[in-house]
Amino acid sequence: MSEAEEVLDKLKIMVLEGKESHEIDKALTSFRLKEEDRKIVFKQIQEFQVDQLLEKQQNEKAFNLKLIGYLFLGVGILITLISASFMEGKILLAYGLILTGVWIILKRQTKPFTGHDEENGKKKSLFEKGLFKKF
Image 1 (cartoon, rainbow, N blue to C red):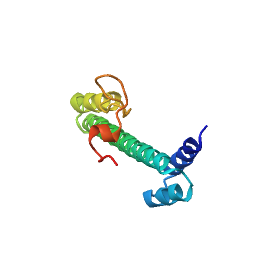
Image 2: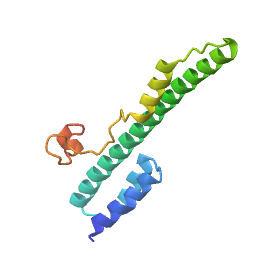
Image 3: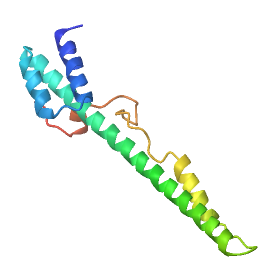
């Protein structure tokens, strides 16, 4: 394993621990890498940070959708139970809310972020996507 790969692994661990970008940049400058290797590691760690951020956002979105699904389900069940207790012999079944809640909970509306290009399955860098200017 080369020195640049070791530095990249250490910096990835820092990203996963939730360190701020400026702390990671300080750590990168503290390692004595050749300028070319430093640029490559810098580019890769930026891409890794963005991937982690997008994955976190996808997880939060999925959690929020499930929460909305449970809310629909709960309201539907609550309406059904209240109608059963107040309307003797009749039940207002809020099946629309219940089924919508179950559907939202079970449906995977958010596709997990992979960082791969949809067309050819190859991982595109942020530079190829045009998000950063090249050095």
